[in-house]
Amino acid sequence: MTLIPLVHRPDLSADAPPAVVVDGLTLQAGKRTVFEGISFTVPAGVLAVLAGPSGTGRTALALALSGRLAPSNGRLSVLGLALPRRAGAVRRRVGIAANATVAPLDETLTVRHHVAEALTLAGPWWKPAASPRQVDRTISAANDLLGALEDAFGDDPAAASLHQARLHRGELIRDTAPIARFTLSLLLALIPSPDMLVVDDVDQLRTVGERRAAWAALLTVERTARAGSGALTVVATCQERRELDDVLDPTHRLSALPLRPAVVQVLGAPAAFAPTPATSVAPSGPTPETR
Image (tube, rainbow, N blue to C red; front, top):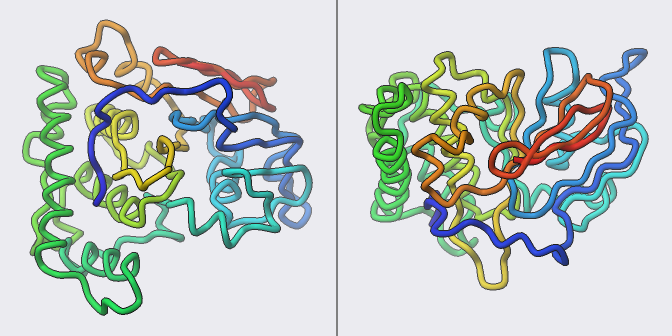
């Protein structure tokens, strides 16, 4: 099953191979350059944030990392698989969430329908449908995560966004709270237990509290580990990372939880990948930062 909080901070061994290696990556769309000459490395088990204003190619880069979009030039390796040559294998191991084109939620269907369909698709070929018990257990896991985050936030404004944000099996998607819908998109992407999760546009959540809650979910969520599998790597896109910085502040109550380290690639800037409060972060053209 999926969507369980991290029980300990991931052990990021220096010897572990990186989850993503990007070297001089460029994407052309006709005469337009979507992004150009991007280079960075994402360690396995971290939250990697692709941050930049509209028009810097955040979503296109995220789709390239998930094997859904072929770059024009440069080298790209995800989970040790070269892209675009091994795109099919990458797509099987990388889940994608919160993207209305690749992973849309049908607002006319219920939470139960979405979860049952995802469980059926991820299940063995000889099992034609997910059982009601499986569906209920999966929805409960998502609600447990939302409840745990609400407790962790205490009197932070994010707690108000989480207060009644729960998934109900018979509720239509269009009637769910925004942060519950976001959590459902994570849930559906994590059901097949991928090794990497790509989440597009955290800024689609409109309030500060909702965005803080979303970042908290991405810093703490884990899928049920398979035998021999390592820590889940999460890649997320955004325009502004202010709310991420808020929850990574060492004085924030959330710091008591076992958060995964965070690194930020700033797109459309001079150059850098860097760490943020949990590990770190930096500007791009490429160049990393850690938090």
